[in-house]
Length: 134
Image 1 (cartoon, rainbow, N blue to C red):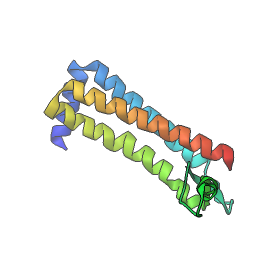
Image 2 (image 1 turned 135 degrees about the vertical axis):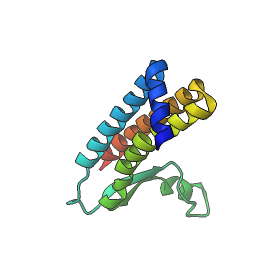
Image 3 (image 1 turned 30 degrees about the vertical axis):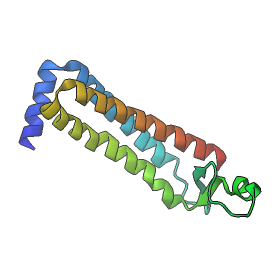
């Protein structure tokens, strides 16, 4: 933990761009965490929890394959993966970025934070689409 704190201090003193990206990732993850918890509806028995374009093959011809895709129903507890994604991406990916900075440099750490932001935005889009169908 001490080395993470020292590395974060070094990032603060010399690499403001990386620090701003890490703070933005944390704020984005916090907003996604709050939004995903607010939109949980434990009173609903069935919610849309996923989407598959093709699904499983369920017939002898192509019509069985086309009819198998679409939104999947499930329980609201399955939607707890979205707050979990927000925690993992917001906290642990920032810690990994600090370690990457120490071992590989600022460029790799910035790329990792940028990819983490993309994953978080993608999860947000998926959650919005599932909520609009439910």
